[in-house]
Image (cartoon, rainbow, N blue to C red; front, side, top):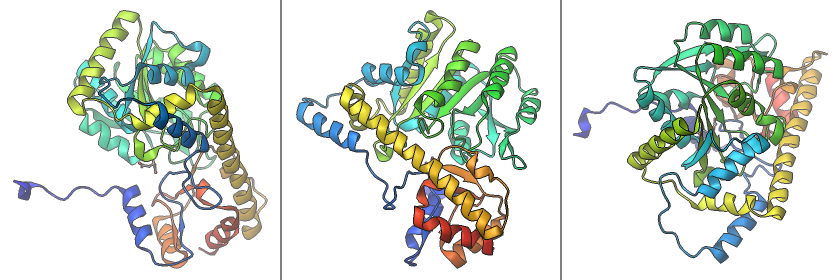
Length: 392
Ligand code: LMR
């Protein structure tokens, strides 16, 4: 049976991590996979999460099955986190999922059922796994240009030009904040333009929210989702708790559906639960239970917000430090794009050969498209990295 299979395609991000693990050099630097690294080069678990897990250990009495949509309290908390006072209980519901990827996949399945033969439009550049997820869900992949390397910002007119070819009912995937891989996010004016365009063309917005709290902060990072829910009749949001709660391997996320009416939303919510039941029956719960405990406890909630904000501001500081080191090493006075971009990632303007040179000569690992994880640049590595960059 298995001999009929061809080799699986290589996932660039996971393969880079594997190569990094195999590198024996002591001074190696991993700017590859998107995980938050602290000043000690650790991928920490937040103190608030640890405390919530301790509480959970004391009070949890059973691990019996939940339902395909997980714990309804967790769903409400995710809606509250994204929408706050804007949450409309008649239009919005949420389903606990195995990570943000699980949310994207079941939303993809739902869209393929609702509109067979529909396309999903992905930003280019984007996160490679989106293609795998939506192709597996049976959607046709199309691409729209997103990033303007000259300004380091979003090329919104090119985006809208490309999306003019989309058919009514097609899905447009948008990164809520901290665009992966470029760190370039639309301005508020560009978001307004985009939201109006999507509504007028009857396109379905699917928002990937994997870095909530890392861009402009918790409130600002939910702006696009709230605006789109107000402007467009329907939308969906895939929330990931991997980065924002440091729960990567526990697989915690939510699929939030925004319907045009209560009855349509209820049908969609029933269908997405049926999809989840058929794919994995029900989501894992340990990490989600920790989030539930944390968000339900005023003290832990505050501690979590502070920890997340400290991570965000550290990245902002590292961006400024890197930009100023680059100016020193290249004798330039230009303001760097890196300072204007958001979240963990930016894409450096490097050729694949230059990326390879950095890996071979300097043991510095980044994605082939020049994407770097800024949080992995501890203060003492900023100078080393800027020096290596200038040398190639
Ligand atoms: C990344 O982009 O590096 C992260 O989202 C991790 C992953 O699963 O690819």
